[in-house]
Image (cartoon, rainbow, N blue to C red; front, side, top):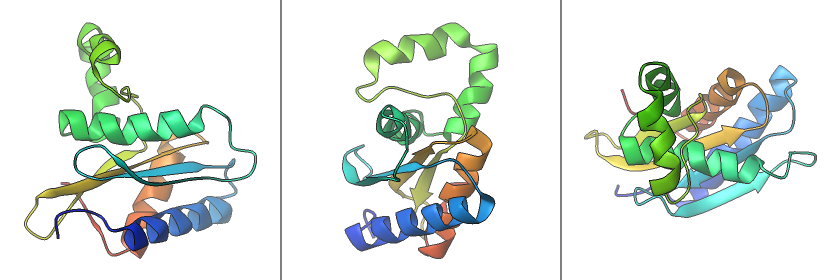
Length: 142
């Protein structure tokens, strides 16, 4: 498999929204990107903030761009704030240094895309992404 399919993307989003509902979270936005950072699918729950699509995309896109989850980028920001700050000017879809952006791989470990979510606390956004990926049978980068 070379990328996440549209059907898989839709399954990820549906399961992420279901997890958010189970956890009683604020309305979410979930974005699924192909390995080149291009949008496959994005959906926004009613009431999700107007900047949430950009945040969800930037979590996923930043993860792809640096080869790290957005959680790890957030951890990196504490030690290298200038480096992370410069990414805003060069990353086409931005970089959000907070949990919620996960790289997706195939059985060989090759990157096939990324998923980002925004809407609640970043740790909770990430839980929803992980639940969505699990439900769709997709693998997370180690």
